[in-house]
Length: 159
Image (cartoon, rainbow, N blue to C red; front, side, top):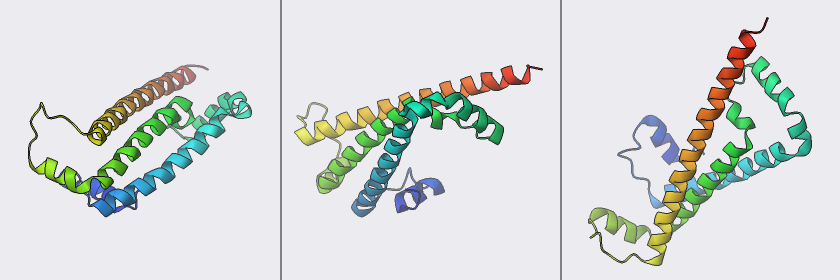
């Protein structure tokens, strides 16, 4: 996904002014679908009983190896990531499908009392779902980071 033109523009800092083309949006959606599949495999692995049984040892080994990002071991992180990517990807499909009409809407402010078309309502709902899942994921990351910091502090204090 980092190889897409849109992701490169985002990394370069040009993203706020950068408006991806229809092809770039389609390309990014395809890359995102690949990430969704990878995330599903990670979640499936984390949910296996034998993985759950070994989780404490996995976390200890990760700490010993300096893998400081414990979110990757949290199934809730992966569930929220999946929800975010699914909503994002569905919204991108709508965006690509209705590209010309969205371009016109973006150029001309719409009255607040305008009746939305069903696809527009779906698009807005998906964007809200994406934002909610992103917020949930950020909260999980903060929680996991805090518990990892507390665990590290407790370990340092133990003789």
